[in-house]
Length: 164
Image: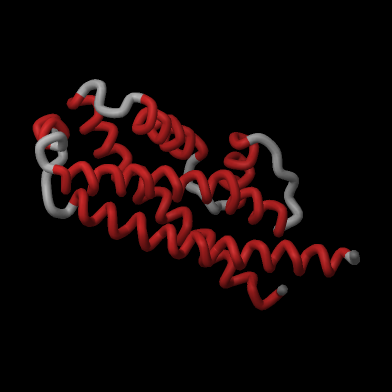
């Protein structure tokens, strides 16, 4: 396989991944709007989830889509972008640092905070209603950063598409 063939294959994989990211983006936006545009999230709301199944469904949908979007971008898209651009990939934090230098992400620190938040939402699920409500609110803010990162990357791909 030639270098050109390898680059073309990397680009094809990247395009397939961007299609999956676009679907994940739409799902995250919908679940985010459903959860945060229609009610105020606080400890009382979190405690009401047991009595109002629709709230649990909205919350679960958002948390799941937030986690999936972040995982897909951090574990798949960012390394694929780096590879496509001829950059070496490494650990998660090394990849984030490279992406920040390139300008695809605004802050490695914010990404690491979002990753820690993702873990809290999964592993400390509703052990404390106040803490969980705050975690949901922070996830909403972090999802805005993740969605902006996706916009930055999509724009970069579109700008560089003609060279492939």
